[in-house]
Structure formats: structure tokens, C-alpha cells
Image (cartoon, rainbow, N blue to C red):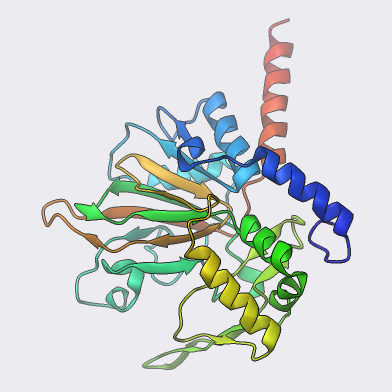
Length: 308
């Protein structure tokens, strides 16, 4: 296993293969699609290929409808079925990411404001049985200015840490590395505290998963030297001009599909008549290239068989 610190040869092979396939710039992630609700085979395979190489892809389409079926149908085509309907999502499980009116719970949370969001993976506060493994983020309308997204494959963050000091990775794989304190509401404890690792190997897929937030409030890091040094290194790395950090601005009809990679968002200014709106769907499933390729191969065989 390449993520086992004792398996240095396996790690070096994985590292070499990862770097050989990794896209070189944000534009390499883009796949043009006619309609994300009904992908052509070539479009689907292109998205899957990029996700297998970089854990993410960007689609670009002419579809600018205010339609929450877009992320849901796209997710289904990528093998994503277990939607995580978090408490701030709509009843259909999709979260409209926009500046919220000053009522209800949403205005208290940064995604529903125009403020910048620091580096994080989604659902870092969730229990182990509800890991957010994948996400679709669809842009209906961009902001008047700002609202840019920065992205980095979490496997590249792991690689940077392991190359610098394997003991830092060991510290961040500890089961008590990071604690998100409980969230309280008027009725008491709305969400209990969650303690766990930053990096873990997903038992379902054998792939690397990351739970992380760069927030400095409402978080408790393990108080030992290795953990503190690892977080300091990671903070500096994410703020650097590393070629592995990609920045772009989603336009109407564009979207991100990913295996919950690290991302942030710059602050923005809205057009009052056409405010920024994105739809976010989060999943307990991971985008599986093997599953999609196998289905495509089976479909191709059936087509060939039916032609005789």
C-alpha cells in the first residue's frame, strides 16, 4: 500500500505514476459537455479520466438553467448515489450556495455569505460513518467580481508532507490529530465533537481520504511537536505558489466534480440583480473510474452483440 509509511518502495512507485499523469494547469481539468444532465460516453469518460488522475474535473456546458437536477443527474452518471442531505441543504439534499437572507441558520455560516472561505475539505466535522467522499459544485451564476476557487488534489498535499518529513504524515494519521468541538443550538448539542485523523485510508476503496480545515477557531489540534509542525508546513504549502495549486473562476454552466479535494474561495461582490448562485451536492460515495469503465465496456459489448 503506497500510503503505508513502512512501504517506501510502493510509495515511490505510486509517487512516480501520480506525477507522470497529473495535469499541469487548471485548464487541463476542463471537459466541454453539451448537457451535464445527459453526458455522451466520451464526455463521461473524459471526466472520469481526469478524476482518476487528479481526483477532480471541471465541466463546461452551455446549460445555464436554474435547475438542481443538473448536479443530481451528473452525480448519478458518475456513480454517486448516496447523497448526504446535511441540515442546511434543501429537502432534495442539494445546497444552494448563495448569500443568504438575514433569517434562519444559514447566515451564520461562511459559505452562505460573500466572505472568503479558507482551505478545507467538505464535511471535515462529520463522523467516520458519514465521510464526504465526493462532491458536485455547479455554477448557475458567478459573482459580479471575485468568488474564485483554488483547488489542490489532497494526494499532492500528502506527497508534499511525506517528502518533507514522513513523521508529519504519521502525526496527521493519528486518530486524535484533529478535533472539531461540538456545535450548540438553542436545544443543546446539535452536533457532538468529532475527533479523528487528517489523513486516512478509506476502508471502502483503499484510497486516501483527507479531512481538514484551515480555520483557526472552533478547532483543536493535538498538542505535540510533530502535529504542530505538520500543520505549520501544510498552512505554508497551501499559501504558496506551488504549481499543484490551481486557481480558476467557475462561470455559468461550469462545475466541479471531485473526490472531495482541498479547496478554498475568495471573497466576492454580488450583482444585486443577478446574485451568485451555485448548487452543491455532497456524497458518501467516491467517483469510481473502475465502475464507470466497466459499465461502459459492458454497454459497448451489448451494442456489438445486438448488431449481429
